[in-house]
Amino acid sequence: MSSRPFINTKARISLTRNLPKPNMYVRMLEGEFAPWAFNEERAPLFRGLWREQVFKVAADHPLDLEIGTGNGYFFAHRAKARPERCLVGIELKFKPLIQSIRRAVRDGAENARIARYDAWAVEELFAPGELDDVFIHFPDPWEKKRQLKHRLIDDEFIEVVHGLQKPGSVIDFKTDSLDYFEWAVERFRRSPYEIVAETRDLHSSEWAARNFVTHFEKLWTSKGIKINYALLRRS
Image (cartoon, rainbow, N blue to C red; front, top):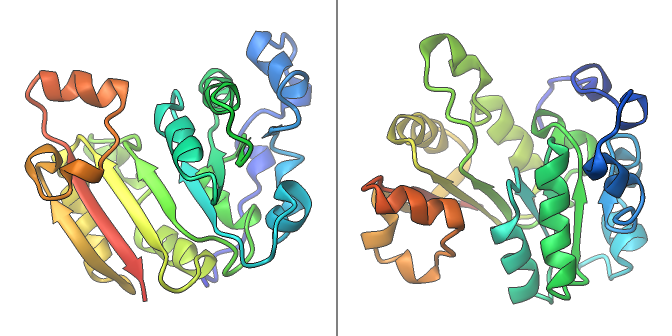
């Protein structure tokens, strides 16, 4: 586990309760979807307790995480397709957060929850060994040189996630940015993970059949943009 101290997330993002003019999505987080969606103050209370207190399942029940759910197409698909596994999503922006959990709930998924939180502080939400599979799809590439420090995938973050996962679990990583992919793979290779899949053209690869294609992914590929993919296994 990383020695990096917990980030004071409350200093990085505006607290939901302090927003002067909450829009409809903020109100839905605090109201209609409160049983399934957790703000940045509620979510950390369940660190190490997601199975027991949130999902009401056994201690060995699979618990997966999607970091950055976006508009929630994959999130809802995954929850419905794998009802035998619990799924937590992390998303900062209110509109996509509500879109994600609303899609899952309206699809009848009972195994999905979502938290408004900063991915950099994921260890504030989960205890060591609490997670199974982790999905990181199309994170912000931060492609300008001065922005590289903002990229989510770095050595410390990988170490943190490794400590949160159970042995044998995986990280499922996709990006449309080749530059970011090369950056990430370089760090994956020197990490404790085993790379079991790696391609710079997912839709033409042997792993295409198992890939769920989102709305935006279809738009990118229709423009000739190739999707880069890596699957890592925690030994």
